[in-house]
Length: 297
Image (cartoon, rainbow, N blue to C red; front, side, top):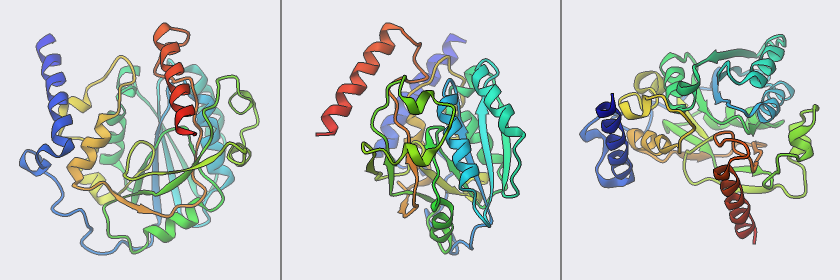
């Protein structure tokens, strides 16, 4: 077992260099022949959104409610949320939303054991291989949708030729403390949260983190880092998402930026992957505050 774990650590370390451009993925992996679709994509009829939640139920609440508040008129959405039964706050929240029905929203709440949940590539790969959607959006539970999100997304995906796209810009809140009103209230309104004076526009340069939208045919064939065994191993805690970079490396593209309206991200000091109140948690939180102040200048 120890030898196997050492091999996976070594493989992951080597892949960080490879994914930085040291050599192309096609040398060792089965990858798409092109980062373009054979034909421009038709108008999308279905979209799967994939999210993970561990100790972030207060953020997931905003995501779930924003989807209901701004559900598309034509596009059929499946929201897949991976969670663990050990996170009882999230379990309770998902039970509440299971009872809410909408003709254009399908709930797909998938329980994983904690260690599998904490390696996001495992759930993302499972969703990718099994999706029936035209496109699949890998995101995080702190991302929310607005009034024009899905109508603009439909327009941008119609005729799209890139296999991987991402919202070029989003709204982001300031770094919210854990006792902030928006993180402790019972009335989850994404619109109010994203209309604070401290909300800024953030530009993405590549498909990363919560903004990875992949064509369904590519997801079904190649999964999400499916061929990279080290990224399919359970972890005891949240880990840095180096698999985002590896995923782009496998697809041979950083993705194409598209104009998707009213997408928001709720930024927060306290990270679910750190033990609350621990020394490491306090150091990490202090570091995030300092970086936030420096970048705000």
